[in-house]
Length: 513
Ligand SMILES: Nc1ncnc2c1ncn2[C@@H]1O[C@H](COP(=O)(O)OP(=O)(O)OP(=O)(O)O)[C@@H](O)[C@H]1O
Image 1 (cartoon, rainbow, N blue to C red):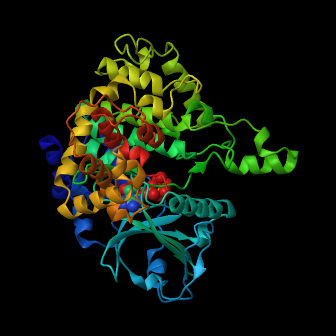
Image 2 (cartoon, rainbow, N blue to C red; image 1 turned 45 degrees about the horizontal axis):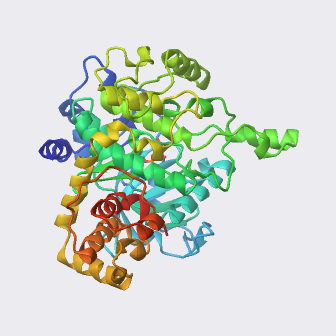
Image 3 (tube, rainbow, N blue to C red; image 1 turned 30 degrees about the horizontal axis):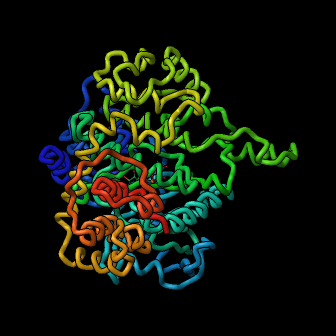
């Protein structure tokens, strides 16, 4: 933990600003033979950061071409101009509705990130004083397809409200010029910043228990719900030291595979799975369906394994400091992936990590990775999605099992640091939820989705409830991320191991609405 403290504290000293430009620079520094230090990054941005103006990433300040910035003046003055629409409470309808004055509820603080289409601002809710993030999307630059995507993002964020690890949706509205989505302001650093702060790569003992395990748990949870994120990359994973949690942002490309076909290319090229690379774009799908009269179901599909590939690419980058695959086009990327993974052998059984990773020589050449890490990457980066394990199966991988105790210790430390009030509330909830049955009671008291501020304590409290109601603290050994479903936990004998598993599996199991 001391090591993590040092990593995260560096952020406050350097005052890194999350932005596409900064993050590109960070990534470049990871692959540079002579990477600029964080201090030099700071020197490059400090004068503008201190001014806290809208031009902090003016093109002239960047050594590399970037997309043209937005017209912030217009965004700023739009507060007063025209009507403002706000969301209603119906989760089924993400339409932006009229409600004058909603935008005035938020005081814009500073930009965190901007692209051609939108900007992401830190803002403050004037009534609650809560710091939030406001995604402002410029209507004039939005195509019909993009608007649909935006509505789908809101829909997903609302459906996933309260799921630990998913950025919390707070509000959405529009005025004449922009759409606005208000989200919780996730604390901490993006994974790419964390990697940079750590000198270019993360040690396995930091990455696996604090980031990879929670991220794999979250993916397994999302996939169980049918949601495929499709844009998993280090910039979208926010890592918070204080709450020892990760948060996934940007659900713009997310799709619920139970409701919609996954047949179009989406996501960031560097993290895109081979089976996604050769798919048509959303526009091409649209035209194919229109012009050829075929239904979407007839087009080639892919599934949630695409996220598992991205997880593998992200893990490789975090451990080595280099992106595994870099190419300029989907075709080149496909060829590169095949070339680097050509010698890949069928994945070894998860129980024999030392035997795994024998293939993929080119990808791993010169990389110092443990046998378990090589095995994990070999499996997650399987070219054939049918041979790639699911996120849930990866939870049983030796790499994750090796650090499971450390992950669990972190959860127990969180339990210990929870307030007395939380314990009392959780114990009361446990009692109300059937603690009298003597079985693991937490299952019966899975709480309603909480406000995001409570998202982490939810499963913590559930765990506390389990411990409090059974009178058994975390004593027994934990066998790892055994998939304990509420049903099996209820029916099975409430052994210490079962309790511990419920506690450990809580982030995965108790977030269901
Ligand atoms: N809720 C949030 N809390 C804190 N920071 C955030 C939040 N949402 C986004 N960010 C920051 O803004 C950056 C960009 O966010 P996001 O990916 O949603 O925007 P984007 O324009 O869609 O990015 P891209 O298109 O490059 O993927 C993130 O990498 C992160 O640094």
